[in-house]
Amino acid sequence: MQTPCADDHWYFVDETGDPVFYDRHGSLIVGHEGCSPILALGFIDTGDPWSIRRALACLHNEIAHDSYLQAIPSINKTNRSFHAKDDTPEVRYLVYRCLRDMEFRAQFIVARKIERVFRGTFHAREDEFYDYLVSRLFQDVLHRHPRNHICFSRRGSRTRQSRLQEAINRGIQRFEERWGKSIRSNISVESQTGVGEPCLQVVDYMNWAVYRAFVRREMRYYAHVADKVSLLVDLYDKARYPHNWYSRRNPFSIEKASPL
Image 1 (cartoon, rainbow, N blue to C red):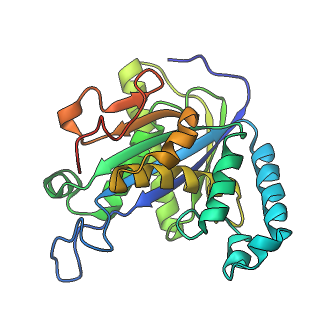
Image 2: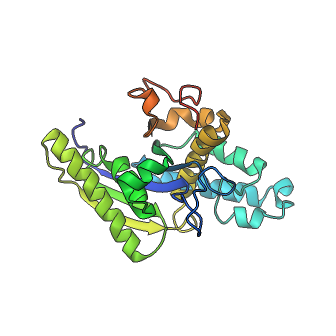
């Protein structure tokens, strides 16, 4: 357990995959076309979000003045907000290259979508499933800094944002019970769009690299930014336990993980 640092710290959070298990008729569709086999949550954390915003603004400007990229029909949408799934390969390469020079770390909680777990642990409720991952994602990090600013990619109503705060509080409670210490950090939670908060574009790209590794078994995007990842937990890969917690001492590779 680390001693708190005397500064502000920022966390930018997004999801990849989806929490959906059933179609409107109640049929299980996990793994079918359009329904992901995983739900993963990730954050990037940094003490200097301003340098990340400046770097992305410079890249947007570079793209806007590139005669080759200007000819791409979707480039105006891309140049409002980078989004890994929708960006062209040329833009995606530039963004991943830019990420390597930024000052941030990333952590991820990956949940394989197992129906008996969904029904037994989360009462077949998508919000409970999602909120549990939020609580696990933040369980062991918020004691490190006295002032923590958490920004989620906007999802749902104000009621949902309140639930996210409650999920974070449950993670804090588990930490306090485990270590017998109180977290006295000041924690603020907000939501934004990728346009309104450029740092969310970075976690989107980091999440996409994780998703491609798990779902497509394609490691090249993750490998390019692997040195940014301080922790990746493959939560329900019980066959690999306790080696399903990947860190710098146990680097993640999809070859180590059980198949989906």
